[in-house]
Image (cartoon, helix red, strand yellow):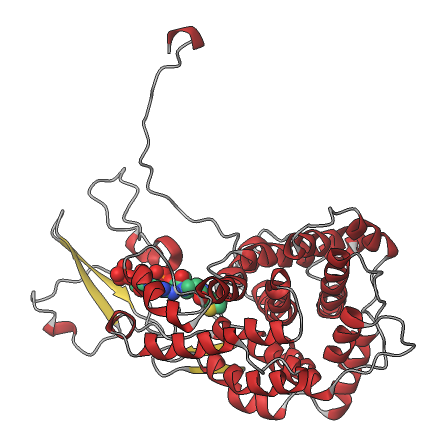
Amino acid sequence: MAEERNETDGGGVATAGKDSLSVTDNRTGETFEVEITDGTVKAMDFRQMKVSEDDFGLMTFDPAYTNTAHCRSDICFIDGDEGILEYRGYPIEQLCEESTYLEVAYLLVNGKLPTQDELDTWTYEVTHHTYVHENVKNAVEGFRYDAHPMGMLLSTVGALSTYYPDAKAIDDHEERHMAAIRLIAKMPTLAAFAYRHGLGLPYVYPDNDLSYPGNFLSMLYKMTEVKYEPDPRLERALDVLWILHADHEQNCSTAAVRNVGSSQVDPYSAVAAGVAALYGPLHGGANESALAMLERIGTVDNIEGFLKGVKNGDERLMGFGHRVYKNYDPRARIIKKHVDEVLEATGGGKDNVKLEVASELEKRALDDEYFTERKLYPNVDFYSGLIYEALQIPSAMFTVMFAIPRTSGWVAQWLEMVADEDTKIARPRQIYSGERELTYKAIGYR
Ligand code: CMC
């Protein structure tokens, strides 16, 4: 461990081959050995490096956690340089090809692919918890006609904690399981209510005969027909989109769920924190911003001027760039394949100017040094907005469409955090840069 002090020969030769780091504190001349485990060093091991007995000790400074692992996780693997994404070890491409969103949700939450019986039970449980208390419906009715659906979702997910107060017992296995089921089951219902509210349409109750995405389409679009029959092509496209969005390791919203959950609050409140984080335009809100950007560009002729603005720092190419992927985002590649399929099913492909602008914009950006030098490639949000638009989903709903599937990832990460012996309440440090020991002056003397 790091307490051990160790003299090196200056060049570090004596310790070559060891899984440790020799750190010389040039303020004191002392050398410390810091253990390396799984390619990381413990920030706490630096605390022993002090200039005097009463010195607090060295801290690490990492705003935005760009180089800090805040947990161990078995859920999601990303290799950003190679463009690899795996859930519980299974490549995203295979899951999108062979699986369904509900099966993937089981995989994320339970850590393994289900047997047929397990999948049937899981599907039954999720399907039979899709209804929400009628008062939740009344709460949605209370929002202004033009309320943003993410704002509504944030509130209603948080409000679920008041309907299921027993979920506070986070040490109880059964309570944790029920919260996982309820969150995955009710999120589409809450999302669809928010959508119908914006249109002034009556809310549609879940239909247990339909698949998970089919039921969602029914809750969005059902009008006077006795039974809504989803187009299987749209049902499948939505299912694939949801598989792609189900988890993405320690992104902003997942970190928010873990951070807030580390206070041992109930899972509905922790997931509400995830919804809030996802709302932001640099995270889940990027799909909405990407479509608004395509609208603003208007025609292919304006792309050059737009890209100039991006390079001058006046604009941001939404749907491009990623903190982890420094290669093509594998999710963008899969989505792109489904755009045509959906446009064919909805008839939205003909003379679609936005699609034309998106394709040309992608081509030009990928050909431009500004983007290639910075390793900026399309991310999942570059094309997802086009699919949602083809489904006639208003752009304000796009981030809600992301929140639905991400719920299984948030739940899986929350469950893992609760069970992790290393979990403590998240409480970062700061470098205090303000004034000290001022003397209070009465208001008339300031
Ligand atoms: N357009 C133009 N320039 C960009 C972009 C962009 N989309 N993204 C990054 N850059 C530039 C940035 O200005 C910086 O340039 P310089 O080195 O000259 O200062 C350089 O590339 C590195 O960028 P960064 O901001 O340090 O990168 P980051 O890792 O902090 O940010 C990001 C990642 C996703 C927030 C950013 O790429 C971005 O804002 N993209 C647009 C929003 C977006 O599409 N978000 C969705 C992410 S995927 C879905 C999700 O997980 O939420």
